[in-house]
Amino acid sequence: MATSAQRIKRRRKLWWATPGGLCNRSAWRRPLHRVLDTHVLRSHDWPMTRWRCCGQWQRSLNNKWNSREFAMMLGVPVPELLWHGRNLLRFPTVGLPDRFVVRRAWGAASAQTQIIVDGRELLDGRACSPSELRALLIGKYGPASIHPLLMEEFLSADSGQSQRGIEYGFYCFGSHVGLITHAEREGRTGRYCAYDVEWHPYANGISATHKRTEPIPRPARLDEMIAVASRLGEAYGSFVRVDLYNNRRGIFFGEFSSTPFGGRDITPWADAHLGSLWSRYCPGAT
Image 1 (cartoon, rainbow, N blue to C red):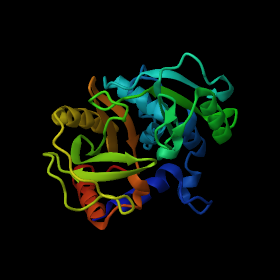
Image 2: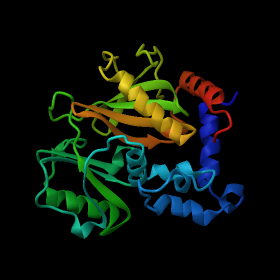
Image 3: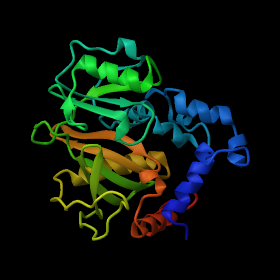
Image 4: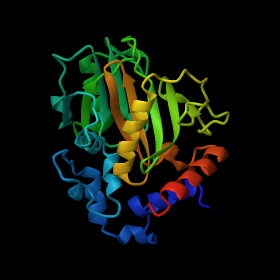
């Protein structure tokens, strides 16, 4: 039985032709289409048949704009979009709310995210005015970013305090939710705790490189979150981690992760457990 890491390695090969090189047969399979899946922005008005354009259509959902639109199409709330664009010289510096999040449409991990709350960047823990933020973004991506940036509302914790709401990760195998995590941020790193669908914590950690955090009480909206994640996972049609936020206004979609932790930095227990769920619930899906 293939482990999760083995399946994700195969996914990376088929979807992205990685590792690269002309010896990789996947590099020769519709390379232009692979590039377009990275850059083309899709719409929630599209019919599902247009989304499912090829056998690797899910890779387009790694683009955070596209994943927002996909969730909207399925009736799942997303954070309010305040601004988006590639021209960072036009990045707004006036008329902004006191709290907002900036994410690049393409990119993994928190290095592509800035969270601004009352003039401070939460992940780096330093002062950051709107003009300083624009300069920071231009320094990172240039005046014209290859991928658009999304400025979204800040989803606070249930208490309404300045810390961001807890991020829940639902490991979906089609419509089946097999494992749930909650993440607690420490700057740009995170600590995780894994649970079954009844919210019984697993003694083993899921990440080999991130610390395990202590379990928290069962969320009041757990059943609702599972239903939302299951709906998104069913539409996705394969393994994916669905990230959701439990805000005082309701459940909000965060993003899809097709290769959590890069498929490499997970514990042997999680690797075997997730691999068995993948084989059981969506054995033929990449």
